[in-house]
Length: 408
Image (cartoon, rainbow, N blue to C red; front, side, top):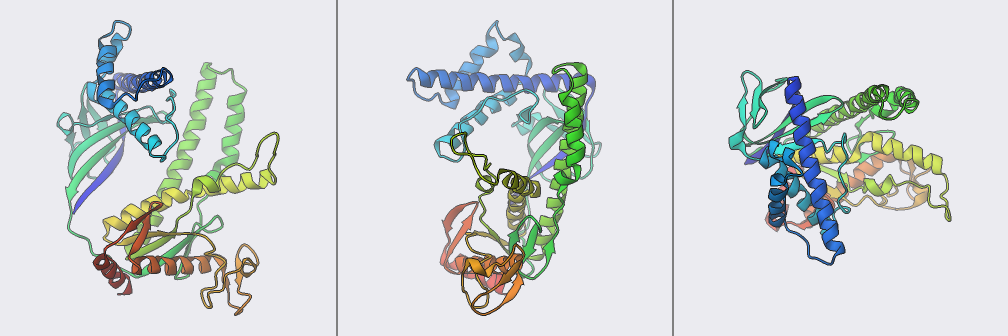
């Protein structure tokens, strides 16, 4: 089977290379914003949507214009990719998968650019160097060997550091899944509670650094915006945010790796995290209730990284030949796994489940995980599976193989 995998490393560029990388990222951001402004002006004038090929012709005019001669200093392919990114954002908007594209701001995560042509990328794996057009060879921290054939490379900036993400493609043997089936219930008190009774305690990386982050944010607010001291304080805040994000991602990678290695089938709740973490402040005419409590809950939900945890579980399970299924989350913690009775009274407290019909008592998260597993098995057995929030029909033979895999 074919596997696409990205390997991300920290770059160690020279001062001149850093200036060029920022210049190239700025050129990509400028073209993206200019193309978006052109689309909005064209729509306001009653014109049709400008396709990506017509937009590339516009970029050629901008590149040769006397008003923007610096665009010619940037490599052509990364800027073309910015136009393709905007076109993809519009296609997602038209398909109602995303909001309307927004302008990119300097200093945000959009400060990146991508080299899509593998013929222009030279990777020296043994010496930890990579050669990119108009940048030359750049050393990177070679923490692991890059496996497979290089397909593209993305250069990005974050918290004062430069990174390169190398996308590769390689053929691997068809994996054989190992282990039993498991259902997972995610929560705030416990990141993941499994149907076999095990659970993973949350890291809560933001909560650990919250006071320190607030201290340096207060210091930054006292500085004159745009001054040298303000920029230093902002860089300090960015480094704290980066440390929080890195700790969370490392923790989730380790947790998802362990679960996907030891289970042939994984069933999770199909949670809409964006809707669950919406603000309850309301409007001036209709103010919300319990705003402070809901704000604290939202912060805890986002600190756990539920969506990222599910995303990692999904692709790692596929890499290992297992089965991943997302099931509707409604009433999973209110349904008795013994008698099947569903009632809001079954969940006495946040942690205690006590069935009002048969008297079964257990941890509510554990009960939810058992019900998630049972629903996942029923979905696979009926020949229908739910992945990434979309329902997809499965052939009977595939369903039979899936059932056999987790039964064994």
